[in-house]
Length: 107
Image (cartoon, rainbow, N blue to C red; front, side, top):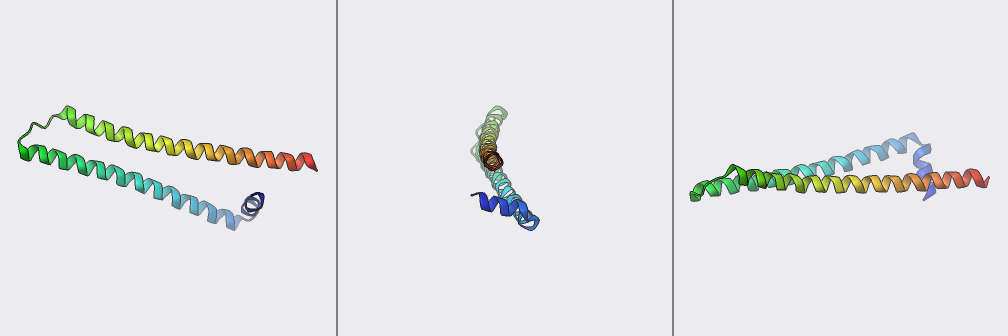
């Protein structure tokens, strides 16, 4: 595990490739979240259209509740993703610092 990280940190070309890949992955996640929001909005529009066509009363309060539940669901997904990334980054940093300290103290 130590060797790939050393190769990445010692060679700027490899580091640049790793950064570009990380950015591509990040944009992929953002695109998925945007698609989720668009799907929720589409369902909301279809629901409002259905309510209008059937003659039911379209209540702004129910629309607010629907939007709020959708926003909360997306917010939870984003916060979970952020926590997972943060935890993974902290673990990797701790592992690398422990390895470097062991190397320094071992010499």
